[in-house]
Image 1: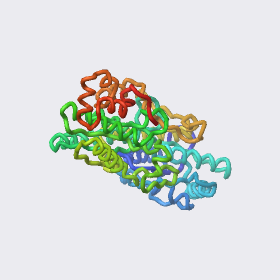
Image 2: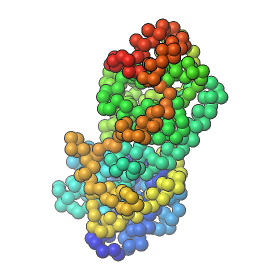
Image 3: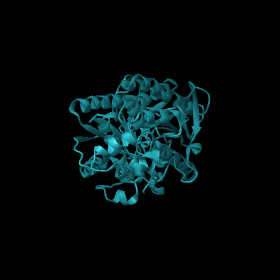
Length: 427
């Protein structure tokens, strides 16, 4: 066994939504632990059973995990169960782990899992006098954990690759069928996935919540952006396109607009259940309504993109990445570490203390947003087909835009000028 604090039994659990590469972490963490004389116990369904005071799962040996890193999904399954919802559930988790002989816990998940790990371990220490050390392995296709610039969460690259291939097919379908697609992609609070897919595929445009820089988003403005792009494409002689919209826009949508939508439910962590809202259909109906008012006829198809990405077999990048992360997580525990997220920076393991990832204002894990001032974003935006200042300066083109509708040029400027920077935002 390596030098450092002795570890007898390591628990591994997975929280949050699936992401390609989970099994890679379980694979390498188990192998590294067993090779150092430790027992490994895989805990089923995240914190779900621990919150009931039960340790349910399976012992893991090398033979159990030797080839699972090629597969999508999670052999331990996953859940969004939230142990932080009460002192009682925190106590149940801590006691179940201690009674099951779990002295160290590897948590694989996103921001909610990171926060839950931190709270469970702290409660065990401060309230029960139990020593349970933890390490978090960052996982989410949303890529929104506060890791250093250029350090992705695992699963993101696989999701971007498969999403890009899907959207490329939709773009060819749109061209062949002369229609438009509105594709809503996963990304609960950030637009990394939508932007990554949009730029890689060459989609017509991508709309992400970060464009509003934290301001309240109005549904009508999103619709106007979509309508403006459709009209610009028509004026340029193209009656087809694919628009990507990050589902995280719903998180920032104005309260009044959100209340008009059907089936607004929240999960165990208090987040709006975005998947329960058919946002693509909402946008489709609103865009078709506005186009009809402009006397523009168009075939428009809505699609949600996300669930088909989460349990895909990981690409080589995420297989390599997760095998490194799992091993690093166990080495961190063997060296006596606790309460940190494992990252790889410049090909070196760099643990980040949990407290450094917390938002001082909320006490919860921070969210990494797309930097809309970065070259990467500006480059992506430059490739999009939108209404902007360039169209506002081209009087002849503005007239062509208006000709596609029942508006006069002046009426068109008055209605959509704010998207081109020639009128104030009306919201």
